[in-house]
Image (cartoon, rainbow, N blue to C red; front, top):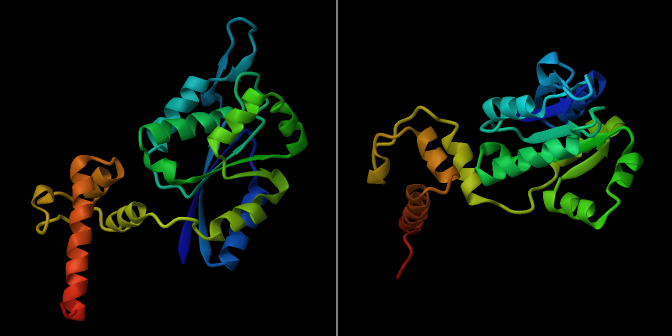
Length: 232
């Protein structure tokens, strides 16, 4: 059974939605492996020096995400919109995560990003200027869903067909299945490297990683021609 890896960010537990999501995914052939970033934890808070109020510590949250999640292979990253904090909401946090992992080519960029809320109408009204609407469009969030419909909507997002086949992502996925195997032949520049190291070079679009993909295609076609014994 395939596994769906979910990272969700909230300042409240949503156990019932997660339990229902697990059941729905199981019905369509998936196991759920969830990770909860709990922003109610005091570790992610600080006291505002100007007001004396306890607020979320954005720098600590960003540091924790960088250290623990950026290079992980999550399928979905979902965040609540309202953290009940004047300085940080789910949209701003997802925007930072997505921009960070895209610009630095972290693995997390391949996940689908979702925002959820129990008050969708109120959230929609906050995007009331052209500048805010533009920032929403630019972020390209995959879904904005009602909190109560998390099980249905994330299941639908999981089983939806991929719009575009990406050869590079497919290759990385299979190389990472055997991370400790050592490459010995075919492409001399990678001789002695682990498959996980080769996957990293491909993922980062490094020169050897790009050249290796071209070489692999040429070898595959040559092998295909040989197998089929095409006549010239």
